[in-house]
Image (tube, rainbow, N blue to C red; front, side, top):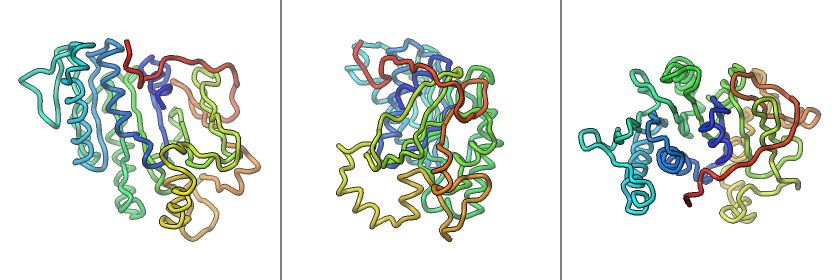
Length: 298
């Protein structure tokens, strides 16, 4: 995830979709990313709109960001000050002309940014409601795409767990509007190896090789996964943890989303780059590496 966010910072990815299980510290990562861009990367001018289905969650994370920026350790390494005249939980500005504004997903009109960070646009409680889900998708299509300061260089990053075939992630992929899709299931499935492509070159390939190999065994060991499967049930686990939503009826997937059984005959390739559309099996090449966006050393 850090490598892909760094590629966004470098201007190599403009639209990034990351689908990952709960508990992968995705919200904290989005906090760290902005702090990294403002501090170690030397881009305090970057303006950020952050959103989530939950207003308390997005305000919580914006507060974490401001506290991190104002911490003694951060200030010692990267002395960036926050402005006294605009330093609230919902929005704060720094002296380098950057800001971070937190908004609920339902209220995204009126602001613009160099980064639009969408962290879980759906609630697990409402994603199966056609009305609630379609409202979130409509906001994504009509209210998010034009929230950019510069439509050619500003970026949209969505990070979420899959909750339904027609959730924001599913619709974004079906629309084929250029999102690079990093898809990381909890348990590795060889027939769904995720490969991402940037500038028509292979950028990332899931390094796991064994069926069922866990994404984060230090945090989610095998026994915990088995407990989760029993507690969640097959439908919820398949969507939230395997990023493979399927109808509760157990029928074939609709609207162009492929079922796991059919995927066995056509391996998934998550591929796209800035200015391109999603493609399958496109121009594999050498991967590029770089420093981690989560490394705070100078």
